Image (cartoon, rainbow, N blue to C red; front, side, top):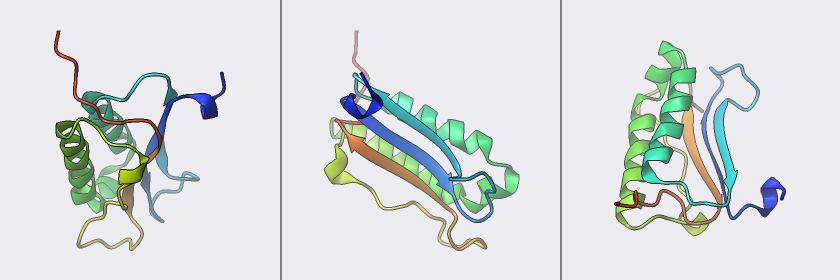
Length: 116
């Protein structure tokens, strides 16, 4: 089964002119099970850790907003591609296009953890 056939697909990214890596830093998923809230927060933490101190500072609010988005989505039972968020940005930044993106391509995403 190819990635495009997976029921749950998406990506979290940190982008901007201050990141020299082509396409910025990103974490993608393509799988047959929904992404949970904890996994979504972990994906954001992964790309945040790839950023150096300056890049993190340029996106401090953006990372916080992205995490809050994931947490709020979970409280609603998850979200799908129709609830695609805009880019998250700091209100004050020196790099105009510094941002954090969450892209939901398919499937219910950021679902609450199942209680056992």
